[in-house]
Length: 76
Image (tube, rainbow, N blue to C red; front, side, top):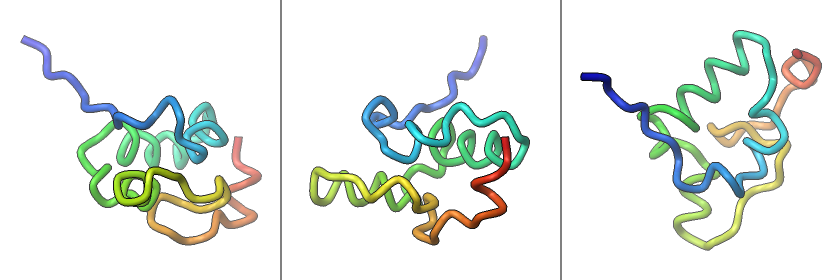
């Protein structure tokens, strides 16, 4: 029996995932797997904002609510 990984119900319309979801660095993969494809979506500011208001944050914010640093922006 395989255990399915939960995927955020808003992943197809998420501005964060749209911008950073296909990045290949281990840092981005870990963030995406934790928030977008993992059990931590209830901690994601995008998820919480969408649930509360029906809209997303701007895409240059991390799931924890902090701005995406220039270092992270340059990772593949």
